[in-house]
Length: 231
Ligand code: PGA
Image 1 (spheres, rainbow, N blue to C red):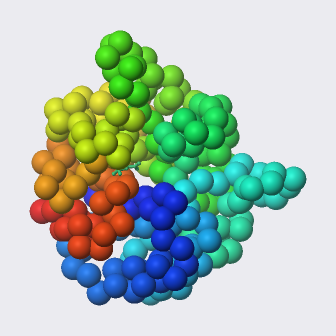
Image 2: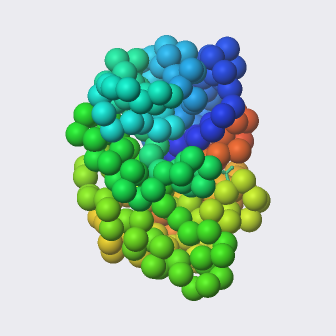
Image 3: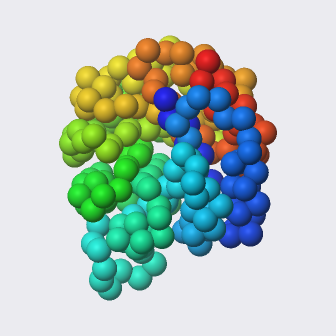
């Protein structure tokens, strides 16, 4: 069971240090825990969490080890900092920064090759779900990925991200079962996970953890989600 906090574009280095030092002392139950700070806060997070089991993940990673790619960061750079893994293909990257299935596949494969753990995100939009295209979309997004011991998929229905509209446990389970039938890897649920709904979501047989956005920015709620998932 993995609970990962996706901080998105929140928490600069100072706030990241304060948060991670408090996280060290928090009661997180018995689950694997990771935080995903913005690039500029990774070093601070790694330092503050040194000697703990809490992993530090980036939010994206370029496929080349170095090169003329303004604004990008590579796997060797992340590894040098002590970063353990990276999110790839988050729906906000796809929606706002034009990332495609092929680009996501390249990032995932090279991050794995270069030694990072990867959380690869998939999920349908509201329009796609309403049009009955959820399965088609998931099949398309997953068709470019290959199972790997260091790969985890996060199923994040776009309509549930930051909206307070969580997928029901039944909807999540159905999608997770499909994902697992296509790719044999652990699958996290993401989309408005809160302390109140975490337990019933992770109780589903094919839900192996959660990728938490908004609720991961508050230490108390993030710790409560971890504890709920550990029961
Ligand atoms: P949310 O975000 O928990 O704020 O809905 C989840 C995510 O985008 O990973």
